[in-house]
Amino acid sequence: MEGDSRNSKSNICYKCETEMPLVYEHEEGFGKLYFCSKCRNSRIDYRKCEHYFETALYYLSPNITQVTTKCVKCDTFLRAHKKKDFNLNKLPVRERYHNPEAPYLIKFHQVRIEMQAKIEELKLTSRKISREWNIQVWYYGYLESNIWRRKREFILKRSGYKCERCGKPSKYVHHRTYERVGYENPEDLMAVCKSCHGKEHSENPGLDIVSQFKIHDCSQ
Image (cartoon, rainbow, N blue to C red; front, side):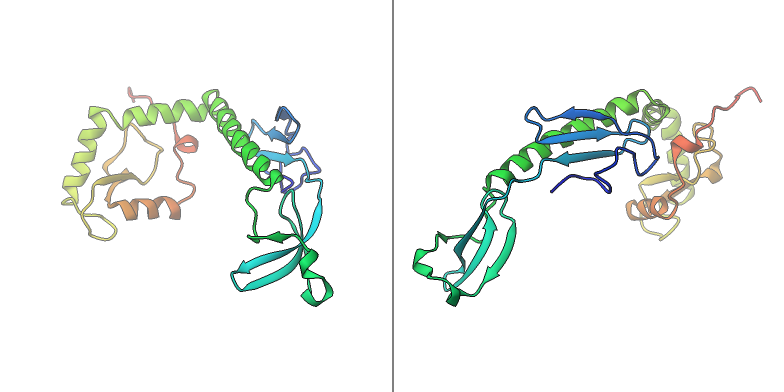
């Protein structure tokens, strides 16, 4: 649990190879958040547990026990032992093998939730100042417009309200390309069911409104 990092020793983003500055630190220094504003990649480094290992008799079930050495702070397993090597009456007895209430685990989950909330805040801030945010806000507004409603109804009627991939009833109109979004040709659009709509996007990962969006001159 040292962090969400592919290389926690480097502050270089593994996606775009730019520096990831430290942008947030938990008040007790338990977690440090690094964030790349260029590609919105993030990394969290957590403070390591200062292990305190204890050998105890654990109940795996009402009739099955095991002698195990584990950290009482983070529940990390160290080793299992043969019961014949110990005086079982002198060992501490633990009712459950896994302890979700170990102090380090409780702290880890609390800070992780805090860090994830901070990451979402940073991503939102980054998107707001980027081209992506402006294009997507425009696009969602376009999908609520009367112009799009008329185009959507035309495409659905053209297909007889049937999915053009599988023939099932369709309620969605899919963009084959976003190059003329807002000024689509009929062949740019197709009627699809929900399942096939997802397949179209998964099979065409390059189909992206941000990269394909263009400003068109209506006078030409």
